[in-house]
Image 1: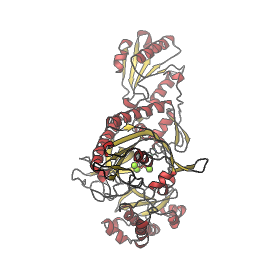
Image 2: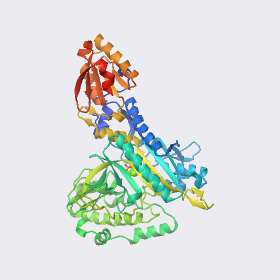
Image 3: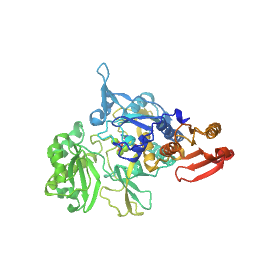
Length: 562
Ligand code: ATP
Ligand code: MG
Ligand code: MG
Ligand code: MG
C-alpha cells in the first residue's frame, strides 16, 4: 500500500477526551474515530490489526474443534423472555421495535439465539458434543463507555458456545478452550493470567477470566508469586435480586425484609472482625451507588459492590450530599476520609450487602444485571473477598500480590441455566430425554486490540508486535522529491511485495521529519529508509521497539527483513 493512498488521518495533538494511552494513540495514529459515545469506526489501519486478531482467534478456535457460524444481531424479544433475561438484564440491553411493534434486542451476547438454534436442530446424543463460535458486533448500552475500544457500546466479540450430553464432556471442552485462549493471548504478545472469576465466594473452577495485567484495568486480581493461582477479587456487580417467580419469590422476599443485619451480624457472617468493616462506605458516583469496603487500615477501594440498592432506595443520600460528606469529586471513588455521617450511611449499606450476598449464593437466585449462571458462587478456595497482599496463597504456594486487570476473555461452564428454560433436550443412548449441558466462551476482540496498544507504546507512538502489526514493513523514501530516493523506494516496494511482505510505502511528498514521526506513531515494527545513501544502494533498517539502526545493501534487504 502506498501511503499517499492510505486513509490514515494522524493527529499531532492528544485528543482532549481520550484518557488512556491506547485510546489516545489509536486516535492520533489514525486507527479509529469515534462516532458516538462508545461507538467507533475502524479506519483502514485499525481494521487491518483487527483482522490479525481475528485470524489468530479463528485459527486457535478451529484448531480446538470449534466451528464458525454467524448469528443475527437482531434478536427476538420472545427468546429473551423465555430465558428471563428480558426482565433481568437491565438497561444494558438495547431494545427496539420493528414497524409492526414487535420487540427486539440488539444482541449483547447470544446464549438465547444459539440455544434455540441447537434445540431445533440437535435431537440425539450422537450429534454431541458441539462447539460453535462467531466473531460479531455486540451491543451493550454500557453505563459508562470509556477508554475507547476497551469499553464500547458497540464492540466486536468472539463468542463460542458448547453443547454436551453430560458434565464430563463439558469439562473436556472447557479445558480445551482454556488452552486455546492461552494460545491466542500468547500469540497476541499479552502479559495475561487466567483468573478465577467472581471470587466473592466463587465458582472457581467453573468460571475463568483472562486478564491482561495493566494499571488501567478495572478489575482487581490477587495472584500468587509462585503458582498459577489467580483470582478476580472484585465482586460482580450486584443489585437487588431479580423478579423471580413462585417459591423463589417467597424466599427472596424473606431475604429482603427479614434479613436486615447489624454490623456485628455482618462481621459474623463474613467471619471477620467488626473493626475490619466499619469503614464500609456507601456513596453515589454518577448516580450509581457504590460500596467501598475498607478492611482495617488497608484500603481495598477496588473491591466495590455496585448497584447494591434498588433505584427507589437511592434516596438514602443524594450525590451532592454524599460527595460533600465524603469530600470527593463526583465519580471519584478514591480513598476518602470517614466521618460520622458516612458511618451512618455505611451501616445501612452493609445491611444491603448482606442481602445481596445471600441472594446470589443460592442456586436459581440471580442478581439483576448479571448473566444468569454467572452469579452463583461456590468457592473451592473459600471467601477471597478480604484477601490481602502478602497473605499466603490459598493453594499453599507463594504469597498474594495484587494487580489490576483488563478482562479480555471469559470462559464459563453454564450447565443447564439456558438449556433448561429454553428446553434444549436430546435423546440419550437409552432413548431417554435429557437436558443439554452448556459452556460459553467470550473474547473481546476489539478490547484485545486496545489492550495490546495499551501495553505496547512509547512517547512517540504505538509499537505493534509482529503478529498484529497492520503491515510487515514500513518503507520510506526520505525525500520523495529526490529522484534517486523515489526510484529506489519504488523498486524496493515492488521487491518486498513480490517476496510476500505486506509493505506500507511512504511515497508522500512530505518532509522526512513528518514521515518519521508518522512512522513512529503508527508503530510498524520494522522500518526501511531509502535516504541519502540511496545512490550507493544503501538503506537504513530501524527496529521500532529498540530504536536499533543498521545499514545494509539493497541486495540483502529481502533476506534481512525476515
Ligand atoms: P466487563 O466485566 O468488562 O463489563 P463482561 O464480564 O460484562 O465484561 P462478558 O459478558 O464476559 O463481559 O463478555 C465477553 C468478553 O467481551 C469480555 O471478556 C470482554 O473482553 C468483552 N467485552 C465485554 N464488554 C465489553 C465492552 N463494553 N467493550 C468491549 N469489550 C467488551
Ligand atoms: Mg460488562
Ligand atoms: Mg466482567
Ligand atoms: Mg465476563
